[in-house]
Length: 217
Image (cartoon, rainbow, N blue to C red; front, top):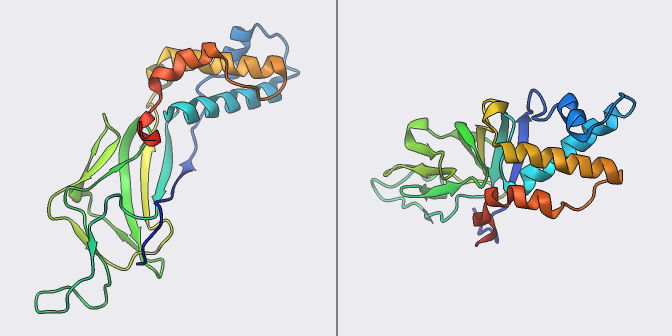
């Protein structure tokens, strides 16, 4: 597998939330809106506000299943296998020594990891044994146990796919200030009739939840 200039990452929703974390009725009561003529556009503003809060904080609110894709393992220890006795099969060109390695997911909260797959250059997937790694929910980090390795010629783009369940199990578990921030931001959108900048009030509510590790801070 040729050297990769940087490790591209992406998050894709596989199973979306069953319902919005702020309902239409809850928002209309908060914003003191009567009637139902604008319900459709209000729902759009609620969805946009929720996405903005999640994007800023890296916190998934409603329970959902996502796929996190990376080009390669961070800090990978990779070498070309030898063909001497006791070496690796010459069908493989790369060996990932994952012992002591870890992946920072960068999103919270994570309920569980469903699978970790690695794709070779023929787009065939190898699923890692779930007993070879552990999820630290507090730090949103997947750590690999000692002795874990993987021999294959991985593709250059999205070679690793991690499927996981994220978000809060119940709406009642979501911090109240995040719910309030969604309502306030959606109200701002409603009043300016478009997507506008996040107010200082909203920023004050959510700034403590922001994960600065992705920014290298």
